[in-house]
Picture (cartoon, helix red, strand yellow):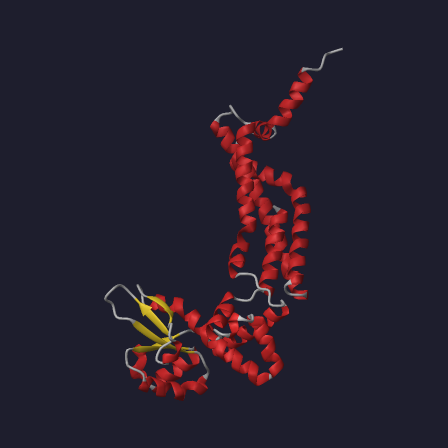
Length: 323
C-alpha cells in the first residue's frame, strides 16, 4: 500500500511537470494539415525557433486559434443542449469555424471563434456587421466585454469563451516549451486521469483480499463475530492508508519547494517510506482503537483476530507429551 501511494504521488508530480495537453497535437494536425503529415509538432516548433521570434509568434497564433476552437466545443454543447458541435470541414469559406447539429429538422448553429486581445475589437465589430445574423461569435473574455459594450444589440449572437487571452497564450507557449524539453515525447492525458486512483485501487484490493482471508480463517464462526473482525481490520487498514497519504503529500510538497516535478516525486517517495516506518509502530494502536469502536469482549476479539496462530500454538501444546 505504501509503495502504491508513493508511486501514485511520484508519477502525478512527474506527469504534471512534464505533460503536454493532447489538444496541442490535435490543434496542430488541424491548423497545419500539410506539415503535420511529415513532421511532429515539436519538430515544427523547433524549426520556427531557429527562424526567429516573428516566425514563432505566427506559429503560436495559428495554433492558438485551433486550440480555442477545440476547447469551445464542450462549452457550446452546454449552451445549446441537444446539439453536437464540430469544426467546419471547409475552413476556407471564412464565415464560420464550428457547426452545431441537433435533432433532424432543427436549424444548424454556426459559430465563428475569435480568441484575441482588445486590439481585435474593431475588426470583429466589422465582421459582425458583414456576417449573416444567424452566425454566432464565440469570443475571448476581453473581446466579449468590449463588443458587448459597443454593440449591445448583438448580445444574443455573442458567447463568452471564458478565456483570458494572455494566460491562454502563455499556457500554449509553456506546453510547446515542455514538449521541446521532452524531446517531443508526450504521455496521453488519459494516463494522468487514472493516476489519482492508483492508491485507492490498491486499498480496495487489500480490503477485498483481507475479507476473503478473514472468511477463510474464521470459517464456521458466527456471522456477527466475523463481521466484527472485518470491521476492525478495515478500520485499521484505513488508518494506515491515511498515514501514507499525509506523509506522501507532505514529502511531495517539501520536494516541490526545491524542484517541482522531480523534487516532488522524490519527496513523495521519501514521505511514503516514512509512513511505512510509522505504520509499523502504530499498527497495534490502530487495532486497539478499532476494537474500541467496534466493541465486543476484548479477549474474544483478540482470539478471533489471531485465531490461526493461537490454534496452532494450542495444537502444539496438546501434542506435547508430559514427561
